[in-house]
Length: 173
Image (cartoon, rainbow, N blue to C red; front, side, top):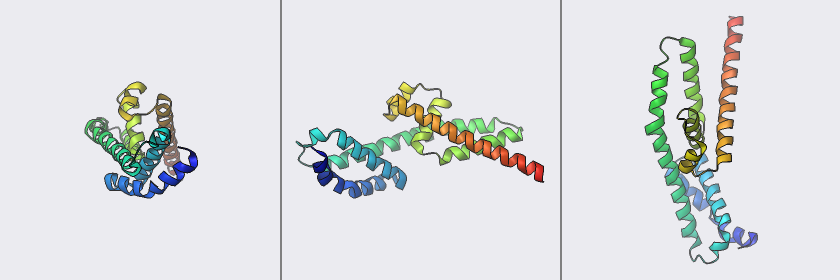
């Protein structure tokens, strides 16, 4: 299947695939990501698609499976990783500054995409190897390293901004 034929036959399904993904994950960003991922899978398999009689059904099956995989990983995160966050938060004791920074860290982590948060937590907190994380997330080693690096950098920047603001308030007030 060449590029023009792919565009004619499959890109018209993009809106339908998005609606399908959204009906499963109830999150626009995640549904958009799943739609893009599905289109990428279809593009990678374009040579095999010529023999597929029901392209729409094939595409819907792919996006449905991708969405359910994401939901399974999210459930794993909520059942196995989040309880450890709570334990860490409670173990801070009376050290107010440390507790305040950890609460900020948790609130920042909640804003990170669920898949990226899962990768970051599995690597940084749980100590999984990139190979083990790759088996769970179906992502390449290099992609996982980039995700962890970006999340770390984002958290570091946010914590530095928080600490700078805190210091500035100390001088002003």
